[in-house]
Each structure stands twice: as structure tokens, then as C-alpha cells.
Image (cartoon, rainbow, N blue to C red; front, side):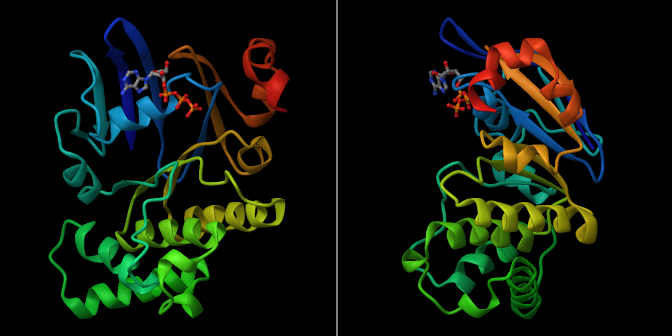
Length: 241
Ligand SMILES: Nc1ncnc2c1ncn2[C@@H]1O[C@H](COP(=O)(O)OP(=O)(O)OP(=O)(O)O)[C@@H](O)[C@H]1O
């Protein structure tokens, strides 16, 4: 469903993403790991229209070339992301935040009632229904992260891009979050592409892992293959795992 070919992004003389190629299939959970500065966030930004990649980069989503499209246009086609630093609106209620996803994330024009239904459904699925009327700014970080997921879900994504959603959470919260992400795939058919530094979060749930190092794809394989890959251990996992 997502096909990336020869993706390249430079900042001045620095090649942050260096001719990267990969595909993500329908219903897959794919992890993206690598050391700080490897180019993971730049790769996400180049796919989602936040950054314009270099000429010759190809990004195709469900058969459509999305390289030149704007972020909101890409989101409306079903490719939706969360951010490393949560970007929920603190002064709004939890429900109002999820409504922004339901109303603005989707390609169809839907009624207020339909949007409210989608928002309630997303909150219930993520396990935040009881918090719907609380002011977002007062939520603990784990619930803000759940809220980001609920807002993304309310916009009916086909592919969800998660940027370090497990950071700052306790092991118990990470286990709950991982379970939710697995359910999003199993029960809603949503594919997931997930940047993560916390190996316990990603290794147990990913079908496949892509490793970036200095902008290049260093390895790609099942979690077991990646753990055993000598080049990956030397570049990254030796410190992290
Ligand atoms: N807007 C920018 N302008 C200049 N250089 C940038 C910019 N954004 C990122 N970089 C550089 O590009 C490289 C890749 O950064 P990026 O943030 O994509 O890495 P990352 O793998 O996401 O790192 P982390 O795990 O720390 O989030 C780094 O050398 C970084 O300093």
C-alpha cells in the first residue's frame, strides 16, 4: 500500500535520507529503528508532505504518487501520523480533540452526527471513553498518547505512522499501548509504520523491522533476524537492547 523508492532528503550538504527503498503491505506492522540522527523523522516528514524530498524520490500510496501533495491531502487519502511531541490541543476537551480528527481527517464530507459517532467509536476503541469530557491539558502523558491515537483513528486511516509513541511511558503503559496497536491492525485492518527507540515495545508486535543508519537502510527483516544482524548490533542494538 505504501511504496517508497530512491527517497532522498538533503539539508544543505547533509544527506539525511540517502536513497531509501521499501514497501509496506496492507495489514502489516513495520518498525523503523536506528540511532539518533539516522534520518527516521526526516523519512516520515518526507512521506507525509511536511518536507519536500529531492527530485527523483518516489512515494506511492495506494497507487497514487503523493510526493507533491500537501500534508492534509495525504491525510485525507488515509495516511495519518502522530508526532514525537504530542500535538493535542490542551485547552480542548478530549472529545473535542478527537472531533478534529473525525471532521478534518477524512476525504468524504460527513455530517456532524456522523463525525460525533466516529469520535465516540474511536474513544471507546482506544479506552478513553470515560475521559471524553475532561480538559486535555490535565491528562497524564500516557492518556495524551492514547488521545493522539484516538484522534488519528477517528480520521479513518488505512496506514498509521507513529513517531516514538512509547517514549516516556511505563512498561505497563507500553504493554497496553502495544496491545491497542495490535488490535488496530487485527480488528480495524489498519497498517502501521512505527518509529521507536524502545525495543521492547516494537520487537514484540512488528512483522518486520527496517533499520536506518546515517540515512541509509542498514537492514530489513523479522525482529528475530534484526536482533541477530551483526551490522545492526554494532550500529545500534549493542547500546539499546
Ligand atoms: N530541518 C533540518 N535542518 C537541518 N538538518 C536537519 C533538519 N532536520 C533534521 N536534520 C538533520 O538530519 C539528520 C537526521 O535527523 P532525524 O531527526 O531525521 O533523525 P532521527 O533518526 O529521527 O533521530 P532521533 O532518533 O534522534 O529522532 C540529523 O543529522 C539531523 O541533525
